[in-house]
Length: 160
Length: 182
Image 1 (tube, chains in turn cyan, yellow):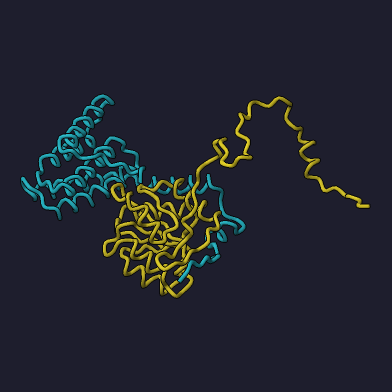
Image 2 (cartoon, rainbow over the protein chains, first blue to last red):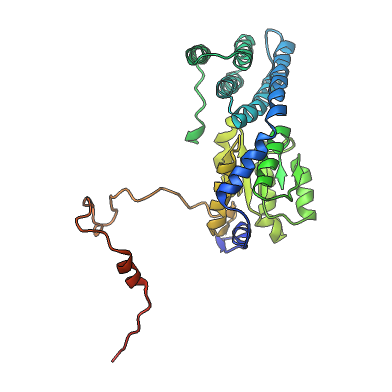
């Protein structure tokens, strides 16, 4: 089979060119408003998700299995959806640091739960306390030192 | 159709789509169920998470792109990737996805990606190893002023030395003119 080039119906293009509808600004604004209606229940869900992560680490004891790390990564991913959508910048940064940590631990087969506990404590602080910019920077700096200690490369999502 | 097992992500995405005026959308948690639904109905757009609970999104995309029903084969596919899965962009593109968007999805980002896809008539390519939208495109922004051909002018454009054309002068270029040919 060689290469076949096929002109296909652009369904999205056809839909977009239909008469009527709303402008981009209006659509984006309306979508933003609708997402905001979820803020209250999802802020509560953030605490629930942090508790779930703590439960996984507590159940693991001093050493965590790869399967549990994968669960942790999955949960941290869910948390990132909430923190990113509703603009909790510090908690978002801590959650990303936890994701990087889990990926690094999985890649290097590290099982110690201590660095995970430090991240979860930082998560609690970031969620419960109103930290100043300096305090937040210090916290993230300390978390970064853990990554350096284990030799984990920071995740570079935009280079893919 | 939205295929995602993450309840939060699914609900947020649902609200965004409703905000865009897409009130009729189906939410499905697994790849297998998505396959069944695609075969049983007609969908204008498939949005799926990169990592489904029962299969990688790449498998679902490859299945769709090799389907005999044209409505399934050519359905536009948007893949959403999580923070640590963003490295899968190339994998998703090579499976036949139209667009890859990183989570969490912001309304303006999703809208712009969909609008971009709608305005670009990318042909479909079918080879032994790939079926999907043409991957040979690149948005490299405006020209950098450095020509690649010998005949390209590489000099600095500089500031305008003459006043801009008036609207009347511009209109005169566009006005239909009757010509008499001897």
